[in-house]
Amino acid sequence: MTTAAERTADLYPTRGTEEVLIERKDPVVWSEPGAPGPASADDLAGFERDGFLAIDQLITPDEVTAYHAELERLINDPTMRADERSIVEPRSQEIRSIFEVHKISEVFGRLAADPRVVGRARQILGSDVYVHQSRINVKPGFGASGFYWHSDFETWHAEDGLANMRTVSVSIALTKNHDTNGGLMIMPGSHKTFLGCSGETPKDNYKKSLQMQDAGTPSDAALTKLASAHGIRLFTGEAGSATWFDCNAMHGSGDNITPYPRSNVFLVFNSVENTAVEPFAAPVRRPEFIGARDFTPVR
Ligand code: 6CS
Ligand code: FE
Image (cartoon, rainbow, N blue to C red):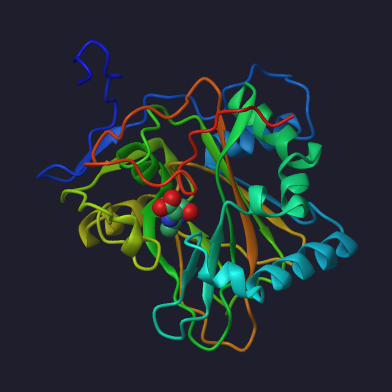
């Protein structure tokens, strides 16, 4: 049993009886000004202000072709469908996501270690980084369901034991993100307020939450307040474009009822100074393929 002294201080209480808004206590950009890497000073200033950084072309069209082919290979591999790391769409039972792709696939493992990718993560987080989570999201057309509004950090704090907001995600589009096929929406600036949600975390919550999140879902009132204060930005772009976003940015995406899939690869980098401890608001840890416990820095 860990003693109170051994337990890491909980700066962001959540999943209690009341919903609560808390001012962010952590920096957004952890590196010193002028830290070397592919992101410019303006890029980092924009990330600090908005909680996101949109890049028109992170990878080339040829690379998109190769990564998209790898996504298709994985989702058509019968052993992957049977693998617990594959999550299916509730309605169509088509594959919705495959987790831990940076370990399953050498191709996606190389992408996670690509200097254009990990270099920006190190600049934002101001340290060496490891992959806390990776996934491909297929989001096929004709009704693939979206992800309701949430802060990733709220889940990663409550269920995976990340103490501080020193984690950054990048969503790299492998198909065109139209303004109609369920693109990522972020509330710019929402990353500076932590929304502690009400409602305890059920055991094995992940088995449901990765299809339709329940615990850790903000109230309508809180979302209305945040949207009124910050607005909502929809991210569109060609395949190969990318959106970096802070772990605490309030974001979500709509259903995709068009014929056009919205597939992406999603990589989550965590600072090696913020390695996972025990969950702050969940009865048990989530499986390691969702919340990594291998803290080996990406080289
Ligand atoms: O629970 C999680 O870790 C995942 N859920 C969502 C909706 N976004 C972040 C993450 O991939
Ligand atoms: Fe998310």
